[in-house]
Each structure stands twice: as structure tokens, then as C-alpha cells.
Image (cartoon, rainbow, N blue to C red; front, side):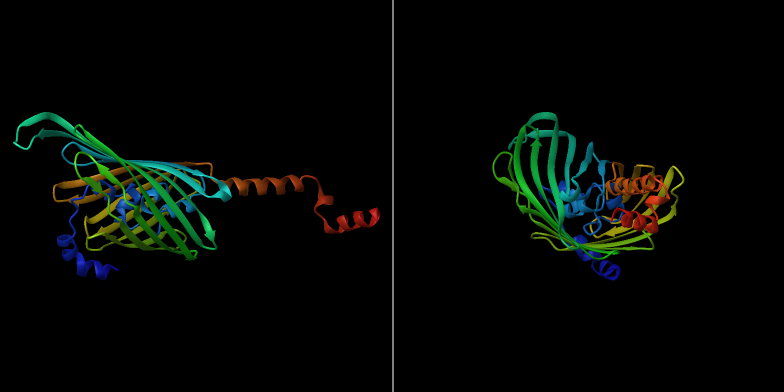
Amino acid sequence: MMLILALDWQVARADNYYGMPNDYLQYGAGARSLAMGGAYVALANEASAPYWNPAGLTQIDGHQFLAMYAPFFEKTSYNFLSYVHPLGKMGNLAISDVFLYSEGYEEVDDGGNVLGTSQSIFNNAVSISYANKVYGRIFLGASLKLIHERVTKYSGNGQGIDLGMLFKPSNGLSIGFAVQNVLQPEVTLRYDPNVYKMNLKGGLALNAFSNRLILTADVNKLADEKEYFSAGMEISPWEKTASSLKRVDLRVGCNQLQTFTCGLGLKIKSLSLDYAFNTHDMGNLHKFALTFAWGNIREASARGILKSRKTISHLGPAFSSPQVRSVKGAGKR
């Protein structure tokens, strides 16, 4: 995959041009994934999963809240919020929001006359996502997107649907597929509608050395555009369960549209702090994310089992000895 990236780098950068109204939905979500070059469709195991692959929600064992802030250039900011709610055997539910705000524009008419100053642009996409296991190691997910666009005084709304699938042939390998805009949103601001094009994604994720090393690789194909590749790596050189600082993650990635990326992650108890960095023709870009997790279902179940065993053992040896149970049974007979 790294060889493919090296060979196709300049071609992809020249041929891929994003001048579409849904540009802001191609920027990514979550500092962890963006530090890994955006190669995340097969990993997607935290609250940014509704953006990358809704089927990844099934990998989340408890409640999660994620907030990302990314300051862009020229009074523009890009943000992402997500909350995941576990439903037990019924799967996982999530609600997320991608929104971009930019200000400092002038509105002019066809003759070049200024109609207004200090105008703003606001784009917003709220997703309601659901995922569950369908068979064995196959998981499916879907998202309903509610789109709102406002450019100066003109605004419009649209709806779309995303689909995702996750397959885990082994404990350390994941294969992911996602189709964004299966139902293509159409948003009309003034005259012709802005149509959000379909985007196809596929990827692999390899987890090795007890979560100490993660390798990811994705291919993306936006309708009418050339496909592009991305790859990422996460290394966890420090992990300690007895400390408040439980884990440190180092991340690097490459994306044919964004050059190289890197970042850092810190996990402090139930709180995760993530940072991503990449260069741009206009300057450097920084993304910051905070994730708070609580109510882990698996941990709660394990504690319940241990507590039950402890209670039985406190009843005395008569309740734990097979010979005593046999004698009691014979006496009753």
C-alpha cells in the first residue's frame, strides 16, 4: 500500500479536485483518525464511527461522547460532535453532527455591487446512526443524514443515507466498506440544487501486539473523481493500568489529498485527549478532540460475575464441595 501511495501521489493530487457543495463532509471527523491519514473505515472503533463507517459502532462497549474542534483559515472553523448509546444485544445507537462556520464574506449582485458585508456561511449535517451484528463476524450499520446549508441569506435542507459494513475474519484483522450518500441529498439555496455525490470507501485494519500496533489502509472513490489512497499507523509505547495516565499513542499517516499527517493521543482514566496535525498550501492545520467514555457494558458484566462467585464462596464449603452436594442429595432421596 505504501508503494501504491508513492507511485500515485502526484497523479492523484493533480486529478482530484473538490469544488463540490459537500466538500465539508470530506474533511473527516475525530483527531485520532485524521492523524492516521483518514484511513479509518475498517477501524472506526470510537465515537467518530458514524462519519467513517456506521457499522463500526458495534465495536463500542459503552457510552461515548466525542467533541472535535479544528480551526481553519480565514475565520473558518470545522467541528464534530458525537454521542454513542449502547442498546446491549439490540446494537448501538448514535447521533452526530458535522458543522462548518465561516465568516467575513461580501455579498455582491451580478453587476458587482456590494449588497452586504460581514456575511457568513454555515453548513450542518446531523446523522442518526444504528448498527448491529447480523451474522457471525459480520456487522452492518446505517445513518440518516439531515443536511442544512446557509450561505448569507439563502438556506436549504436535504436528506441522505449512508451505509456501512464491517467484517472481522480474525481477532486482529478488520475489513470495512462504506457508501456515503446512497440516498443523495439535494439542497437548493437559490436556483439549481446542490447534489451530494456518492462516495465509496473500503479499507483494512490490522491490530497486532495486544493493541500496541495498528496499521490501516483505505481507498476512496468519489463519483466522477479519481480514487485516492490513505494509510495510517498507531503505536502505543506506554500503557499502564495502575496509573491515572493509562495510555500514550503515537500516530502517523499519509493521504494523497493532504500530504503527511501525525498526532498524539493520551488516555487518562475515562478521558481521551487527541491531537492531529497536517500541512497545507495555506499553512498548518491543527485538530483537537476530546472523548469521554463511561458505562462499559462488558466491564459491568464481568464485575457482576465476579461478585456472584464471591457471594457463593462466602456461603461456606458445603456449597462449593461436590462431595457434600452428593451426600445432601442422597440424604434427600
